[in-house]
Every structure is written in structure tokens, then in C-alpha cells.
Figure (cartoon, rainbow, N blue to C red):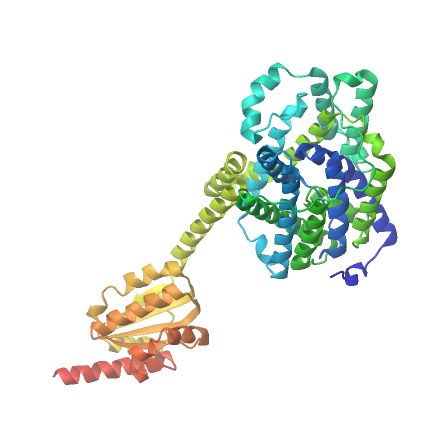
Amino acid sequence: MLSLQRFKHVNLKGDLFGGVTTAIISLPLALAFGVASGAGAEAGMWGAILVGLFAALFGGSTSLISEPTGPMTVIMTAILTTMLASYPEQGLAMGFTVVMMAGAFQIMLGTLKLGKYITLMPYSVISGFMSGIGVILIILQLAPLLGHSSPGGGVIGTLSALPELITSLHFSELFLGICTLAILFYLPQKYRQYVPAQLVALVAVTLVSIIFFSSDGIRRIGEIPSGLPSFIFPTFSADLFTEMVIDALVLGTLGCIDTLLTAVIGDSLTRTEHDSDKELRGQGIANMVAGLFGALPGAGATMGTVVNVQVGARSPLAGILRAFILMAVVFVAGSLTEPIPMAVLAGIAVYVGINILDWSFIQRAHKLSILQMSIMYGVMMLTVFVDLIVAVGLGVFISNIIVIERLSREQAKHVKAISDADDDDVPLTDDERALLDQAQGKLLFFYLSGPMIFSVSKAIARQHRHIGEYQSMLLDLSGVQMLDVTVSLAIENAITDALEANCDVFIYSPNSETSDQLKRLRIKDKLPTDSFCESRVEALNKALKRMDENTAETI
């Protein structure tokens, strides 16, 4: 599964710089996400190490940096909260079992080659749930930012407890959190190109807390254990199994979307093309390993990936070096994390949440489309206050209904029925128009074009409603590229109605796929052998001849 082909563009200097730089960026984020999730700073660090290492080894991109991300952390926080509330002793193991299941789900998607379909959803839906996740991350950090531990209960619990949190806030920790945010927002760009703002905030505000505040008055991380992480044995519960499966699907799907969108950004910077299916398998392996060792799940990280490419990294070697550098930090310098204030990490997490919000689309959505803006805000609210899977499912459903309705209106314009050669709606030659004129309004020329999807069936039914007024019907399918089953049945109904009204039917269908669809419906069995014609002219001549024969028989 490890492909050496991805390492053919190794740039030792660039990959080394990429590994070192992204490790520096990952350090404060990994600590912040670990604490924010409730699993602890060490879970965030080992998540950055294990997910980054195995995704780099087995993924399908050359430049992608994988680690715990804001969206994944939000979902993981909810999972751990639910599991620990139901099973205080086994809840943590069950939460990481969900991570393993999510990894297995990602491997399955990659193995079934479904990677290219993961991101096929409307941008308004993607924007809505990503912004919703940003809002959740911000709300969940309000308690630690105000100097308190999380009140529990997720978003609703935090908002309910907010008045009490504000009245009993710890000014010293709030001050440290505000200082962190001030550095993150206002650090000059000329310094950011040399050192990440997150690392500056982490070090600077930690030093301020040591110098100016007593150790007892500030909640701090504590020392990260320097040994290897403990093995987590997969743990299940019969009454929560369904919920664990759903959580795994949500976590795995979000990881796939996050990763593949980031991989596309990496491709645009490196002028390469990633393998979506292989990337999903690599991410799945990485998350399964992370779950086995009690580490946070991860996905492709946009900031790390962009910086990785900008400093010259061109192969997965950068991601591998980054993982080993972070591992060295855990083994050698784990004690250095002890004085880091929790409020600093909360400030970093709030900053990440603010950046997750899709400000670009939020600012322009009302100008682009009121409908899409409504979907975006609807998905965002559902994500925050209801459930991510409900939000995405409902958003995709409504968006698709809107698209189908618009497409139906456009396609209905391609369903035409005329009996007068003076009508210019259909592409007839002069000779064909002359033949149609000879029918004296007794021949219905039924013309379909373009892809015929199920919603066009009503338009077909409307056009052949007065079929009893005609002696012959010519069904021209020469312009149809795709024939949906529902439309095929609508055509069958039109033919049946025509035959019941003693109206002769002739079909011109040169497209083999369209003809095969009609054959599968056994429409040929309902018509005389000469009803299918090789050309439009032949069909018109046959219709005129049959009309003359019927007239002669009547006389």
C-alpha cells in the first residue's frame, strides 16, 4: 500500500524546512485541540504525530499535512461527552473506538473508489456546516476563556450556563485569553512569515502568566507524559452501538470532506493531482491507528498544507519528518508544557473557530442568491443547535430539489409537439417541413432533445394530452443523449394513449442507448414492425402513407 512513486520529487532541503515549519505550527494547535476535546493535551499531540505520520506514508497526496483539525475536534468533543456521560469508566475507550470505526469507514470509501463523490455537494451546504462547526468551537471555548472548566451539555449547556460563567469569571484568565487573541489577530505580517502567530502567542502569554500571576490562580495544562501512549482496546456497548456507528459515519465523512478539499488546494499550489481514493485509505489507516492509541482523529489541514508547499516541500517526506520532530518534543520536552495556561489554548481554539467561519461566502451570499444564503444559514443553525448529519442531509436534499426544479423547467423547454410546419421550435429541414405540411395538421411531430430526467415526464404528459385529435404521431428522439426510466415510462404512456386513440406511431431514435432503453420496456412489441425508422424523412413518409391508407379505407 506504501507507494514509493509519491517520493520521486523529494526535495531534501524543502522537505526538511516543510517538516520543521509545520511541526512548529502544529504544536500549539495540537495542544489546544487536545484540551478542547476533553481528551487532554497528550491526545492532541499524539493525534498530530500518528495521523500526520501514517497519512503521509499511505495517503494519495504529495504535499498534504494531516493532523487534528477544528471540525474534527468539535465532533470528537461531542462524541466523548456523550460516551463519558453514559459510561464514565469505559466512555473514553468507546469514544476512541468510534475513531477506529471512522477510520475503517474511510478505508471502505477509498477501497470502493468513492473518493470523487465525497465533495459533490452544494457549496452553500459545505459553507453552512463548516461555519456551524466554527460557531460550535467558539461557544465551547467560552467557559475556559472565562476561567472555568466546561459546564458540559455541549452548545446548549454552555449557553445556558453563560450568565453564571460571566458573573463568576476569573479576570486573570480572561486577560490571558484576550492577550492571546490580540497577538493572533494583530501580530504584524512581517513577523508571521518567520514564526507562526500561534506559537508566539503560546510562548509570550505563558511567560506573562509565569511572571505576573501566581501559579495557584491560573489553570494550567500540566506535564505531558513522555512515554508512548497507552493502547486502547476497542470497546462497544449494545445500547449505544447504533449511536457509535452514526458518530463514526459523521466523523469519517467530515474527515473525508476536510481532507479532499484541502488536497485540492494543495494540488492547485503544486500543479499536481492527488489520488482521492488512496488519500481516503491513508487517512483511514491514520485514524484507526490514532484511535488505537487514544489520540485525536485528524484530516488534511489547510494552513499546514499551504505553508508546507510555500517553504518548498514536494514529497510526503515533509509530513514524516514533521511527525518525528513532534515525537521528539513529547519525549524530550514534555515538561515544558506544564506552565501553559488553559486560557491561552482556549484563545487559540477561538481563533481557529473564527477562521473556520466562511467569511468570504457570508459577506457575499445575499448578493449571489437569497435561496442559497437561506440554505447556508439554515445548515449552519442546524449544525450548531441540532445535529451535523441532519444539517448536511437536509441541506443537500433541499439544494438538490431546487436544482432539479430549475433543471426541469429548462428541460421542459426541450419537449416540443407541433403539427404546423410554420412553427420554428424544432430543427426541421425544408424538405421535412414540406412533408409535415402535407399532413394538414393531422400529424403530431413530437420532438425531445437533451438529457431527459424524471422531472420532464409531466411536460411529456402535457404535450400529448390531445393526442386523439391526430391521425399519426412521429416521436423524434434524435436529440436525446440520456433517457431516464421515468421519462421512458412517460413515453410508453404517450405511445399507449396514441394507440388507444387509433393514432399511428412512428419513432426515429438513432441513439443506441435510447433505443436500448425502449427495447427494455418492450415498446417494440406494442408497435408494428415498420414503426421504427432510420431517418426523420422516412418516418414522415411512412406517416403520410399510413394516413392516406386510412383515408382510403374510410371512403
